[in-house]
Length: 288
Image: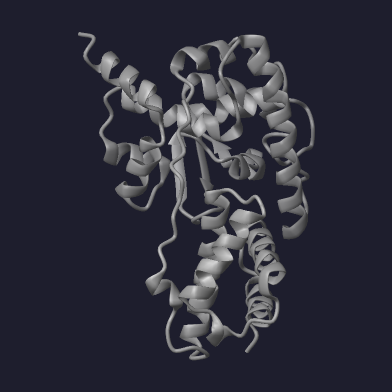
């Protein structure tokens, strides 16, 4: 069977269950393969083909982590072909997916305190701070929150990415933000006015992507106004993790708060901090 045909069938199978962003990536990665070799058969994909495909992606300006993401999609697609006995083995057994290390300086609590000065400035700043106060809620989950998810001084919701249930008490700062949006006099069901109340799954994904983009544009102005190094939706989650490290929280507790399945994921997450930042953390820990 043709690889692209099989990949299209995979997308059809997963269209009703996979997250919108997952489907978007599957389609994008399939298109990269199709541009390289649209006629390749499943059984023709071997180590040599994979290496030529990697070389092609490098030559067309793809960065290493983009290549790694594309290869991961290809690997899982070929594994499905193995599971369906269309090919005997997955050629990725002989190919190593290589990721480039990413080093990003997470915002420190001093930066967060500056951002707190702008609470109420706009919904994006408020939602960012709410994410930080609530253990780094992902932007997709922030957008999906309903007012009914805030009850009795707690926030309870199910994470979209891994379906894990989250129940956290709201600290006073988080409660202040939540109360303002709970009592804003509108009939909106969502906690934050970032996406519509009643939308289909595909439209939900598009609206979340749009809200993410609008927020990141707003954060550029905040960054310039406050003189902080960077600010993004994901920075709230990274800042929370870094703050917990500086407070001396053990890594397994941080894992549980971030809802990582494995402590290895948490270790990799924290390892992405820059050397300077890790040095700051150690210096803070030794300040007694």
